[in-house]
Image (cartoon, rainbow, N blue to C red):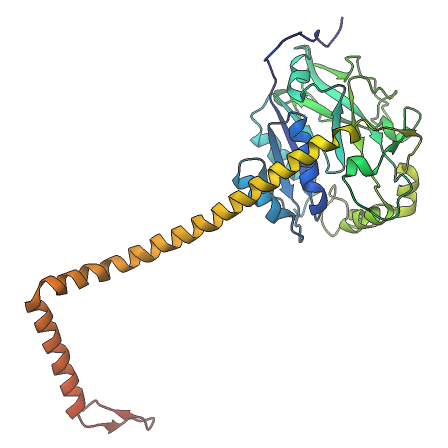
Length: 359
């Protein structure tokens, strides 16, 4: 029996899905990643900042004010890697039917133009998890980043023969998740299937799929990008373990590069979406700028209102003095008397040698 229901010719039914990620000093990639997955149909995107020192958090703050994304601060906890804490928080925040955890170098690419919500809505009720094999993209021979989006700069990838592509990411029913896992959260009940609906068979030793299946969709993993970008990735460290742990640094960069620099086949599936992604990026940037300006104006207005509230008692006293000549006259007489007394009082030296008017 198939675990995927037939695609209806017309349907407005869409399952809700939350997308969560953790990032650190990856500002150049944020807007593209958000735009791509918004176009893919993700309605709620939560990003956890793991101590960035670049302009990424400021960029996201504007989008968060506009309601496009949700931004959370995720510092390095002392006991376990920040990604686990971030995704545990995302799961607690999720009110959607499904949840997906991806890194910023991973793009969920479904076959065709079907939104992720419509795809997941067709999943049979007894299925709790859909897994997507990695499709690792190599450097395409680039040593320097160059110009362009990630999805159009790197067009060569591995295929079903590559061991690393047996790794998976998943979409999991929120109510079925039993524990946090970055790739495939264990579920309490229900079936686990590939994107094409076939049951998943896992290698017990590696927890990877026994076979690579790309029907239905895949996670395009741009693990290395250019060599310079890989070096920057290595310097950021590994978010799976606590800060300060020697394992925060990836394995030897040359070995990592050799394992993930896969350029067997040319694929332009994601690149064909570049024009739409650019349009969405421009729209998001304009929205961010507007909300940033509105934010500055709002802060200025709040400060003006606060100043006005502080001046209100003074204005009230000024009106009283204006409308009550008798009070104004008495007040001025008292001021004159005090001034006259100060003028005629002898100045006596203080113990510190300074003059004093105290008798």
